[in-house]
Image (cartoon, rainbow, N blue to C red):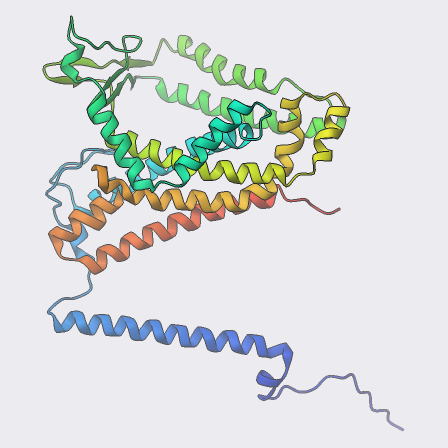
Length: 403
């Protein structure tokens, strides 16, 4: 006698792709992907056909042609005989420079302003309110132009630094002029690579020690002198090896030569105006994000910390802010992305970023507007995805982890 066992399994049928909930969502996604791919293919084919009708083709060969224009702000070697690809790289590096500097300064300003806006001191809280509301409610472009005009019109001219002039250098090494700021520039000599390696090792040691101190504090409650040890690791090894190696790094100071300064590091007004405007503007939004994150933490957390004898500064740094980060980080990512994309306003003050080189002069000279804007959009897309990815990794690391 045989026994038939029904395990509830059914053979697959095509109709299950529509009527079975196990397959329906997958079917819809596949169909949507196919329709999107067909739509994009049609648009691309239409573009190619229209270009062909006008005697054009879709090619990136223009990147190898001679650029024929100068760029005033350069992080790598470049001249007018370089290719358009080199010019685009210079502009991209300039964009990355101002975006990085802006994110760092905006974060510092935003955290400070956000915390101080909750201060019990009436004057300090109102001053931070004026800063936040003032910068948030005025267009960024106006702040860029205003800061640029202030530096160009309000700062002394280089000739004022001559002997007997009205202006003088700060600490005999920094000149603030209407053409920019001139700073001492390091000159790397033999052995400087070893010194840089020592400095990098110091940074790694600081990170390791802070990580160890955090784990020890969570395990035992003991607070180690993190700030003092970090400062010692930051300065002492580099100073000791500097003298051991015989001073491999020297400084080139700016000097007045003719009608302008020579030597040193020149920070142009366009870079400073863009950097400060982006930082102050974005910092105002970050301040509100920080304030909202702090207010999201129960007041009982602070009261419990005070009851344990923690001072207000330690309560903020050890109890409130670590919990508020989980609320702060997601909207903070959006502000970093906005700052990076808002840097394209650099063209208003003549700062040669990716928008001005690849998306501006190169397009005008080659007539490759479609290819140029495609590459420019691709650059901003990749950069935004990288920033978002890195910040999301950090956000995941500070999430509450269930046991």
